[in-house]
Amino acid sequence: MLRSNVAFRIRQKHNRQGTRKPTKLNTTKLSTISHRESFEQEMDSALTQWEEKENSTPDEEWAALQQVVYNAAKTYLGKPDRNHQDWFDTKDQELQTLVSRRDQVHQRVLQTRSTRSTTAAYKDACRLLQKRTRALKSDWWERKAVELQRAADRNDMKGFYCGLKEVWGPKKEGTCSHAINRWNVDLL
Image (cartoon, rainbow, N blue to C red; front, side, top):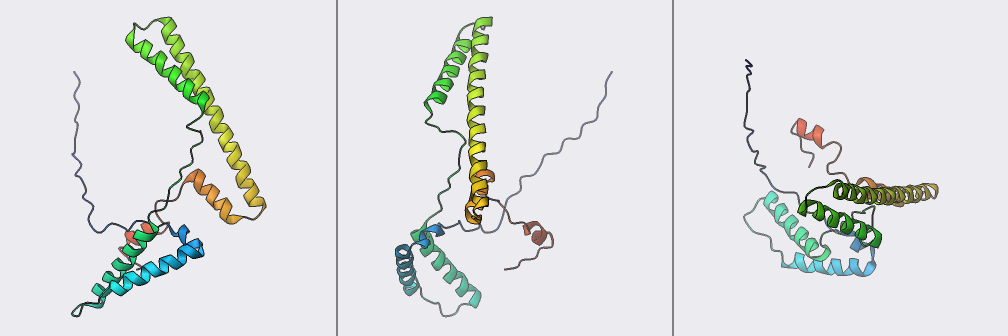
């Protein structure tokens, strides 16, 4: 006879409360002079339409001004384009044929009775596809390493760190956010 004590606890769903962080803006548009000048005109027109309310606190005024400026910037600049680099080309013809071949063999295995020959054909198709994807991934990493090394040799720190971001991705949180939230301290 076997006896066991099990304690199950249903986890409560945590509702996140508070305001959402504003979305990031595509500030790379401001690097050209023409975009910068038209952005200034857009901001001037938004600020001329903004009216101060009479019986309001400075905090309310600041929040209203902040909202007007952010909305004007958001309509003109928009969200940044996220270019997540894949290590394979989605239009690679050889890769597409290997994927379609694997799918066809898999459908044949599912539709008919699984025999040694169909199972072997499916495993062979999977092996060839995995071999090709591993080769593509290895080539991509080698190209990226050469590109990063060239940027480091030229002392091109912007190119180097942009390349690192492409490989590892941007950080989701700042480094000190945990310490700030730990003691409930707001710096802003």
